[in-house]
Length: 288
Image 1 (cartoon, rainbow, N blue to C red):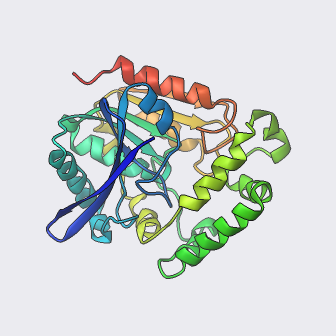
Image 2 (image 1 turned 30 degrees about the vertical axis):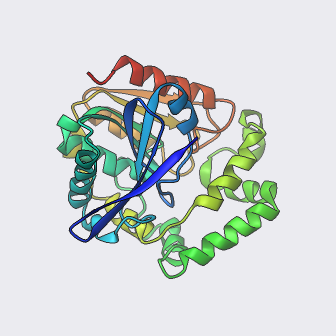
């Protein structure tokens, strides 16, 4: 896939973004530790006639950390980016820790949004200071350290791909590795290796730890566009209470629970179902 990467600058603020494909635009709020080089699920969207626009969220990649002072400020800049690109309406796709950004954007800028899709998304209060995952993240992914953390992970993953896959597996799934084995594809090990080579946290993940707790029940209830909520039954990163909570509070939503092996619903034997459900939803609600 040919990926165009550019920088939109305004008032000493920069937003890095990428565009792949042509057709109806999908605007992606990527997950944590990611950026505009995200790949999961993109190939199938492009092959089905969509263009995929991915801004690096606040503090990630080449996007200024000042964008992340609040969800309100961040979404204001995302709207300015769409205006810069002369795009009047998009399908909004929010992934994992990008969930709050997607929910807030859809609730405050309904005129820009045709549909909202939440994939493995955080939709309510998530990691808090007492959680061991939060404490570990504050050490391993703080801005002055994260580069070395990811360099070590990617080096080890390149040398021992299957070993690192097994070590990381419990962070993605509630299943044991043995229970999940028949749900995996052989290509999953390589997909995780590639993911770890493009991951970086920058200032973004620390901003996520704050912003994921900014979204309110009122924001969810204010989402008026058709919404598809996709989540694995076995997600070990974002608990099932998140998709259920979103479904209860977003008026025009449908819940799609998947039998994938975990958080990364674009991998494994059920990945085709993930792609088909999303593409059918987007084609049903075409941008007029």
